[in-house]
Image (cartoon, rainbow, N blue to C red; front, side, top):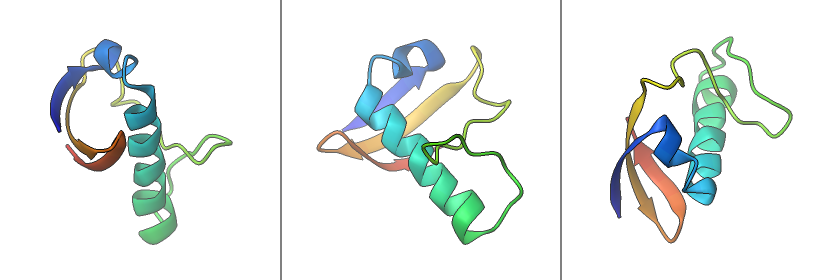
Length: 68
């Protein structure tokens, strides 16, 4: 499935939101060892995740596959 969603709409897709933010934590913090904050669940949420953000997300079975 392909989604184009705002920050508000992303809240209506909790499983996809969680898996996307977790994957970002794994990719950026764990793999690339960038100095970014993760919450206690390993989710990477930063200053770009605000009310003006639009996400382009590909998912399968309620799981994040890719996003921009």
